[in-house]
Image 1: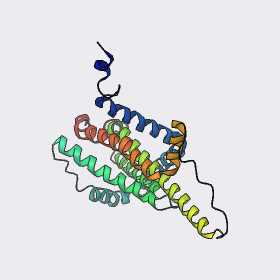
Image 2 (image 1 turned 60 degrees about the vertical axis):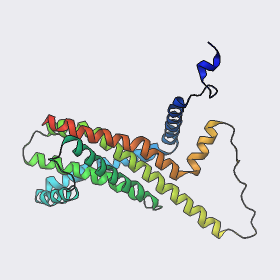
Image 3 (image 1 turned 45 degrees about the horizontal axis):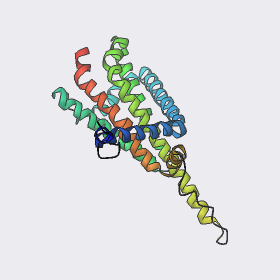
Length: 248
């Protein structure tokens, strides 16, 4: 058996092998983005989620009369979700709803300096605080409610919320840097020499990856949303549609 029969006509790289290679490269870039840019923003998002939960829980425990108004607002925002639908349709609807909310959260990061995506985990934490407060006032088994109705899909959904917030915060910071750079360039003296351009070709993969992480925030955001946020939301939606109702 000759070498050609083993490797095929593509010089050792079969068409079927290109997909996994691309996936590995994209997730390797995602890992570098996490280490270099995302980790600190994820911590801010997690703290915002915890702060929203504590604030919501304490608020509704002290003022239980406000629970109904808040619940009506939440139900109104979820009116497009048909709970009586089949599990598959329910899962797809939940996925669409959560993906749309995550897109909005990430897109809010296009506004520089304000870090608007941080509002998303605060609101989600507040809703969790509302649900736990209502369960307490109705004398329900709160630990069982959390373990059976929130935790199974919430592990994936809340992680997606935090990651989408992380990406949005990163985008807001990157847009802020671009805005500052443009302002400084506008204020620079006309006779000042231009800064030296970065090297056009970088020799090693880590150097190319580091340059891409700095120079292409939009690419990073799209990659992170497709590779991390959407899969987590899809898993969460199917757990909520198929498994969570069985745990009641």
